[in-house]
Length: 93
Image (cartoon, rainbow, N blue to C red; front, side, top):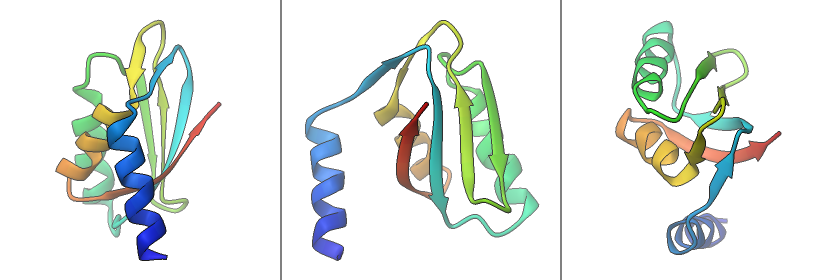
């Protein structure tokens, strides 16, 4: 299982993904309280390509609307990691 996770991360780093005007839903590990939600929402809200952020502690997910901008999923993942959390899976809607 750890090897599969490592391979997934390495593939993500080697092949950056850019999405245009999409809604992203990202599963997050490590959120435990309202402060976690607030800090992650503020961090992601500072990214220029993000129009709206909704962080759910209950569902352990982040929903991001990119508006008319293109979103660099790798930059979003890195912002989540920099906030102290782990992005698990990205769903493009």
